[in-house]
Image 1 (cartoon, rainbow, N blue to C red):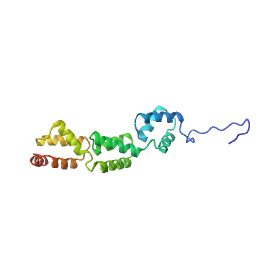
Image 2 (image 1 turned 135 degrees about the vertical axis):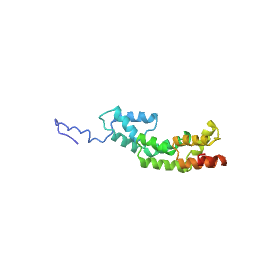
Image 3 (image 1 turned 45 degrees about the vertical axis):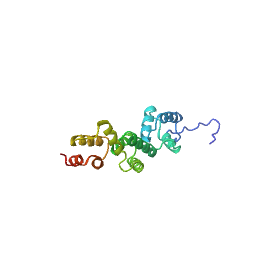
Image 4 (image 1 turned 60 degrees about the vertical axis):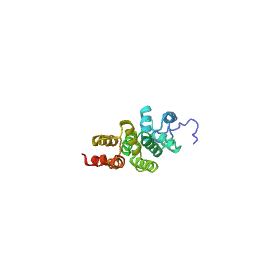
Length: 180
C-alpha cells in the first residue's frame, strides 16, 4: 500500500503478524539440528529462549516445511526405544506423553511399531538380553524377578506371563504361574 508523502504508516500489531520471527526460526533450526523434537517441546524451548515473542508462527512454518512432525517423531522415538533399548509400550507412551506428544499421535505411532516389530514389540529380545545378563531363571523367585524387571520396562503383565510360559522349562513355568 502506498502512503501519501509525510503520512505515517500505522504499525502492525504483533498479535496480527503471522510471519515467523527470523531470529526465532534460526534458533529453532539450531535446536532441530541437534536432535529431533516434538512441537510442544520445541515450543517450550523457544518460549524460554525468547519470552514474549510468538512461537506459533515458527512452529506452523516448520510443520509446513515438514521439519517438525509429531507423528514421525513419535514413531521414530517409539521404534528406537522399543527395538534398541528394550522399552515396553507403556514406558514409551509415558515418555512421549511427558514430552507433549498428543495421545492419539502416540497410539498411532505405537500401532505402527507393533506392526513392524510384531505384537510382542521387543519383549522377546528384552527377555533374551536379561537372560544373557542374569542367566535363565532356575527358581520361581528368579522368574518373578525377571517378570518384575520386564514390567518396569513397560511391558504388559499378561504378555510377560505368556512369553515366559513359552520360554521357561515346563516345570518352572507351572511353578511360576502358581506362585510356588
